Amino acid sequence: MKKRLIEQLQKHLINNYNRLPVVLVKGKGCRVWDSNDQQYLDFASGIAVNNLGHCHPRVVRAIQAQAKKLIHVSNFYYIEPQIELARLLTDNSFADRVFFGNSGSEANEAAIKLARKYGNEVLGGKYEIITAYGSFHGRTIATVTATGQEKFHTGFQPLLSGFKYIPFNDLEAARTAISPKTCALMVEPIQGEGGVILPSDIYLKGLKKICREKGILLIYDEVQVGMGRTGRLFAYENYGAPPDIMTLAKSLGGGVAIGAMLTTEKLARSLTPGSHASTFGGNPLATAAGVAAVSAILEDGVLENCRKMGKYLHAQLTGLRNRFGFIKDIRGKGLMIGVEIEFEGAEIVKRCLEKGLLINCTAGKVLRFLPPLIVTKKEIDEAIKTVTRVLSKI
Image 1 (cartoon, rainbow, N blue to C red):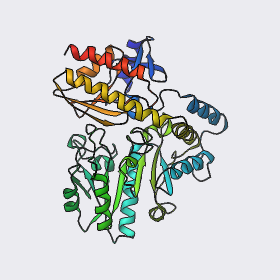
Image 2 (image 1 turned 30 degrees about the vertical axis):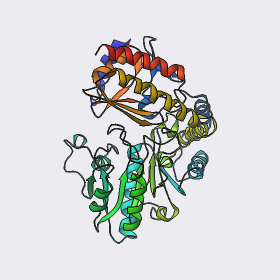
Image 3 (image 1 turned 135 degrees about the vertical axis):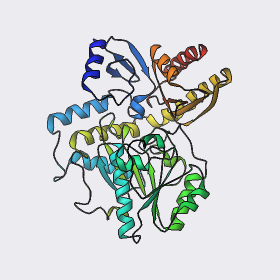
Image 4 (image 1 turned 120 degrees about the vertical axis):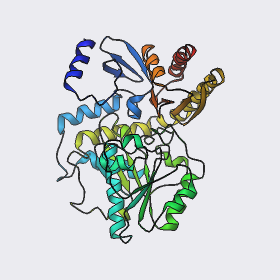
């Protein structure tokens, strides 16, 4: 069956992914099974999507119930679960208003458009957005331009004008880069695709202060780090520096595709009817799943477990660093942890897969551990045992 499915994929799909040779068919909690009924411990979580694990009961029930009632209507009408999800997000964040899309890229597009529209209409014609080297903001032409990694730009030039890049974690570079045309600074509180790069304790507060002094906006891309991944509902809560605009996606819908852009009442006024839209954005099915997912994160002890298990996983990985000299660094927050090694990590990812553990590698040499936030100590011990076996044969 696996061979047939892979052959069909290779025949019919565009070959734009480097896929591992496994066909996953079902999941529960922190585990998934392939078409041969082989079990895997999932410490990748669909790239930080399955924060509640696979097929969380609250999310499944919500999807089933909503699918029986109403799957889609357009935003010409009021949508009950959309309103409830917006209330949950604003009640638990800095924001007053929400725009819903379908992905992180759409959320970041909305943030970029809002910043430019506000910059043009309120800030006197400002449009330039400053982002960081090593960032990742999406795959559309605007968000790939915002991404500060040249490898994602290759082949798509000319990119959009009006973007500028600075080193991450460098406040003086941020201050110097701001020009009379600048309307916003846009950063990930923790860079995920860039290699799990954490900010200094003063960086985000420093950016906020600079933005206030210069009269420009501060945007956080929390697509990967939000929804509990760092042990707080939103990563900015760890640093005490709320933004003007924030984007979410990935785990917001418990596995269902949805994105969101959150902002203040003052800024939201710039997006008047007809200025921005998304046909499927915030539809009944996706937002019903989102209500269930956010409620579970807030009510079921998920954040506390993330903080506790994050410390435990970090400690166990630090133990591996003491054993294997090719491990250069262990860094992360909550259950978002990167293990930087001295060589390319793709082979380690492949060998872990063969041993029944799913992880991934980013920035070439950073093994990224993103287990579900419901992970247990026993499951972490199992993962560490597998990684130890793999690294012992390197």
